[in-house]
Length: 492
Ligand code: NAP
Ligand code: MG
Picture (tube, rainbow, N blue to C red):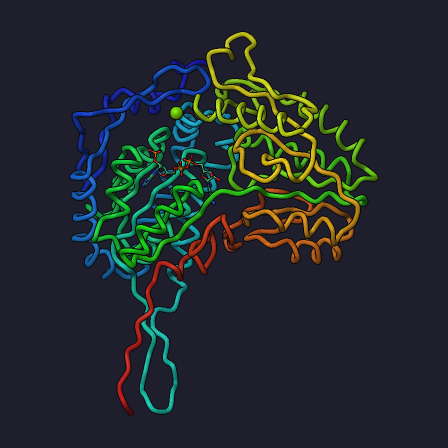
């Protein structure tokens, strides 16, 4: 399948050059633009605007003006727009899946199976949560007649990475909007397409002007202007730990609460009594999902020594059987790296890991067969070695797993917890009681059992240590995080 055979609505959307940004319900084009590339072919597929500091200022100022009226609506009135948006995402599933495929590189089938429907569900979930929430709580105290009231903050700013543009955007803005905040969004410069399409759907869903604003542009310009803007009242950043620390510093200086969702180096602990084939299949699937460009993926695999050799040989065979290809082809399971830069970085990490003593069990190279040579494809890679290899501990963000052997439970938990990140780990054993104990002792935002990458609305997905702070998505607690508490009291 080629770009020309995409859904007619996708093709019509891409025709506008450059794709304008949404500010105050108006579509604004800029003089300077940026090409958007399809990582499966290297071809330019669209042009987007490059916002400067003035564009960002306009977006924040209109979001600030739109805030009082949006906040004054009842939760049910706001929920109407969110549920309408969910309906429109479901109507245009194919278009959004096409855009995620040609922009990020992920297979259309993956976007249809997860990214798009899960984004729609997110708006429905927070529409419901907002209507069930309590906004005024009587405290029943002795000396004072007092209440806690909960109110939205004002303008919430969002900066997103390139790996799950639509889903992460939904995870961020759905609770913010449902709680009554207005939003300004900066998607990653490499992957702005689905966010711009979502902006069209927000308009169609009837969000009032200025409630949802999107600025496309570079982190160093548009991103900086947004995180530094004096009118933002909340900041939500998803991306690398390095940039996240910078965002945290800026917000700290301005006393703006920041939600930071950052990188990871998840451990999978495979015990000797694991469902062997289930673990091989589950971990292979987790690592090749989105070509390994998943913050919470398992990339350090601790395998019990008694099953290590057999596990390695079965996983090697599973890796070598993964259908790699253009995401527009229905038989592709793993697409390319999202950018040439990311492909080069992953290949560099593999080379450095090897220099530091790791053995390449399988993979390790770019895929250059046939048409794939034009894109940024990498073979799923298994490295084997020791914990002190830097790439056994640092995030690679590609389809690369590092195999490590362990002997006993206490030892593996200590080794897993020595890593500075704290996003997501998993434990694999048929003994569920023991699995729960091990899961609880693995320090991170998320501990999964006999699966990796487990999501459901209502299940909090958060982070600790170098993987982030102040944030967390997908739960009632997330929604509460978009409301500030105010005490209202008089002396009895
Ligand atoms: P990144 O380089 O940190 O970029 C993330 C976003 O920040 C992009 O929109 C980028 O803009 C922007 N940015 C860069 N410099 C900025 C600055 N000085 N001020 C404001 N914004 C700035 O991360 P990435 O490479 O896109 O994404 C991969 C990382 O995200 C990985 O570490 C992954 O683990 C993490 N991640 C975490 C989660 C989570 O939930 N914890 C989810 C997904 C991804 P440009 O696009 O213009 O550079
Ligand atoms: Mg792209």
